Amino acid sequence: MAETSVTTPSARVATGPGRTPSARRLLADQVRYQILLLTRNPRAMMFSLVIPVMLLVLSSSRRGHLDPRVEEALVAGLATFGLIVTAYVSHAVGLVTSRQEGVLRRWRATPLPTWCFFAGKIAATALIALGSVAIAVAAGAALYHVHLSTGAALSLLLVFILGALAWAAVGTAVTALVSTAQSAGPVLMLTYLPVILFSGGLGSVSSEPGWLATIARYLPAQPIIDSATRALQHGGTGLAPLPGHDLAVLAAWAIAGVVGSVCFFRWDPVRPRHARQPR
Amino acid sequence: MTAIEVDHLVKRFGGFTAVEDVSFDVPAGQVAAVLGPNGAGKTTTIEVLEGFLAPSGGAVRVLGADPRRGGRAGRAWRARIGLVLQSTSLDMQLTVAEALGLYAGLFPAPMAVAAVIQMIDLGSDAMTRIGALSGGQRRRVDLGLAIIGRPEVLFLDEPTTGLDPEARRELWAVIQSLVASGTTVLLTTHYIEEAQRLADRVIVLADGRVLADATPDQLRARGGVPVIRYRLPPGKRADDLPAALAHYVDPARGELSLPSADLTADLYALVGWARQNRADLTGLEISPPSLEDAYLSLTADASLSPLMTPSPLMTEPANSQKASWNG
Image 1 (cartoon, each protein chain N blue to C red):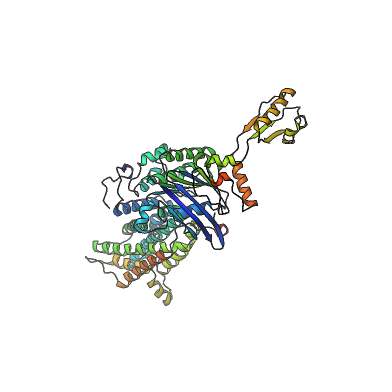
Image 2: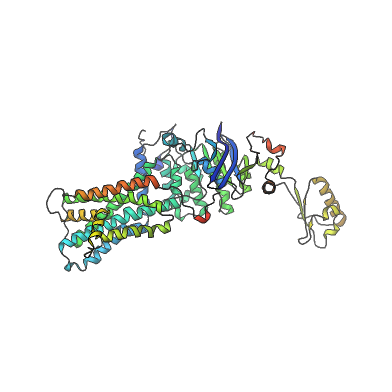
C-alpha cells in the first residue's frame, strides 16, 4: 500500500504492474467526489446554505423585541436546522438517488472498500454541514448581538461535528426505509421536522408539555441546540463547557445509526412490486 | 485458460425460477454473447457472475474465483473485472473526465483518462456534465468506467438496449476495439445483429436453459436456407409463374418469397420463366440464411417442445465448449 507520487487523476498513467492505491488516496478521492456531488445539487445547497440565513434575516426584522438571550438560541437553532438538513436530508436523498440510479451497485462492484465509500460520503457531508453552520453563525454575528470567542468556537465545532456525524449515520440507516428518490423527501421531512420543531430549533416552544420536553432531550436535535446556545452565550476565555448528557445522546444516536446502517443498508435499487419478477 | 465457468447454475427468487440449468465456459480472450428473449435468464446469469446474486444451485467461477468472495481477495478480484449494468449507472453531476478520473484512482494500473476519452469518442465532451449527455454518450461513459481499470473480464448487460442505430454502431466500434486487445467479454443482448457483430460465440438462453451454444455461423447454418425474393412486375400474376414457384407468392403484395433448399434449381426456373415471358428481374434478391431465422426457429422450437433433440452440429460446437442439452 504505497503512496503514489502522482496526484491529479488525469495524470495517473499506468507504468508496469502498478500498485493497489493507498487507503488514504482512495478516501481523499471519495471525499472530493462526494463534495462535488453535494455542491452541484442546487436543492441541497439551497436548504443547507440559503434557507437558514434567510430565516435569520427574516427574524432579524423583529429583533427589537428579542431578548439577547433568545437571539443566541435563535442563531443556534437555525444553524442546527441547516446542519440537520445537510447531514440528514441531503445526505440521505443523495444516497437514495445514487442507489436508484445504480451508482451504488456499480461502486459495490469496484475494488473500493465499503468502509471507504461511507467514510468519504459522511466526511463530505460533515464538511458541507459545518460550512452551512459557519455561514449561519456568521450571519447571526452580523445581524444580532452574537459574539464568538475562540474557546466558544472550538466548543461549537465539537458539538456540530458530533451532531453532523450522528445525523449522517441515522440518515444512512433511514435510506433502508425509503424506496425511491421521490419518496425520500417526504419521509425524511416527516422525521426531522417534528424533531427540530419540538426541540425549539425554529423558535422556542413555550407551551410544550413536560413529557414532550423530556423526549426532545433524548432526540438528536435539542442536545445540539442547547450545547450550541450555551457555547454562544459563553463570554469567558477558554472552551465553553459542554453538557455530558448532550454529547452522550449524540454519540448514542451516531452509534445507533452506524449499527442500523450495517444491518439494513441496501445497495441495489428497489424494484417496484409490480415489476418484481427479474429477468 | 478458462475465464468464466458456469456449471449447472440454478437461481430461484422465491417460487420463481429465473435460471433453471445453465452451463457454459468462456475461454480467456473470447467474446461470448448470451442471446435470448426477455425473461430467458440472461441478466440473472450475468448478475451471478458479477457477484451481485448468490446462486441457488450449481457453481460459477470467474478468473478462477468465486465472485461472492469478500475481503481483500475479493477486492483484488474486482480490480480485474469490468462491468456495464443493464441500465446506465452514472452520477449526473460529474463531468466525463471527473468520473473517469475518479474510477482510474481505484485500480492498480489504470488506463490514462485521456486515452479512454479518446476510445469512447467523447473528446469534445470531456468537460461536459454527464447529465447533459445523450443516452448513447452516457452509455459510452458507462463503458469507459468499465474499462479504465484494464479488466481481464468485461461483463456487458444489454449494452445497447434503448439506443438509436447510430449510437449502437458507435458503441459497437468501441467494444470491438477492446476485443482486439484480448479482453474476455460476456455480453447479454436481445439483438441478433449485435451478437453477430461482436461475438465469437452465441449462447442462446430461453426459460432459464441453454438452447444452443455455437458460433454465429453455425447457428445461422442451422437456421436453414437462403430466401429468394422477387416482386412481380406490373401485369404479371402469380398464376403466370411455374406452379412450383407460384405457391410462394403472397398475392396481396405480389411478391415471391421462396425459402430455397436448392438455390440453383429454383433460380433456373425463375430466370427461365422471366426470359420466356420477357419479365424484368430488377429487384430480385437472394438473402443468405439469417441468424435471426435460426434464433427464431430455435426459440420457437423451445416453446413448443421443451425436450428438443440436439442437432449433431449443435452438440459439438467448433470451440469445443460445454453445451447444456438436458433441456
